[in-house]
Image (cartoon, rainbow, N blue to C red; front, side, top):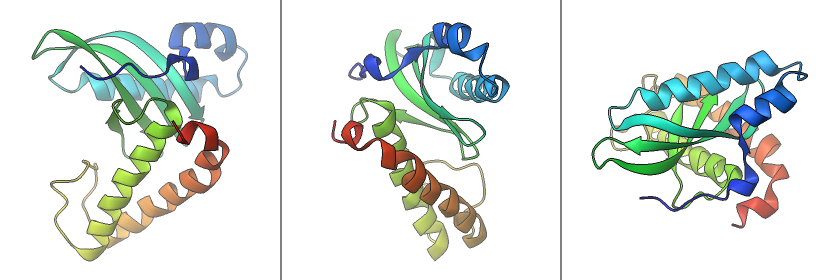
Length: 164
């Protein structure tokens, strides 16, 4: 079982969407990111059922960082995982070293940068975080632009959270 993440840095999805989502002009985009994250997690055989879903933060159309509590099929126990979706390859990040949304995004960026570096060199990527495109230098360049943007424009505002 993973460590429980810092829930004070997240919002219950249903409460968020009822309270803020109805008046948010980006509500449809945010809901689409959430649905993509749920579908991504549910695509894994080890995810039996989602018990709770929370929103970490969202930049509509760019990235959504969601937290899910779910039942693991192999051991019938509860677990937590971050799922990131958007204009990036979807991925999940374990909570052990990522207690809050900013650290989850930071871990995602780091893992994806390893993939970018390997793809740029033409090296094997099978042992790295899965990416839903071929590991070509062109795909690496496109992903690198997105990762740099997330690092410089999004994470720069979460300095204190990154110290967790």
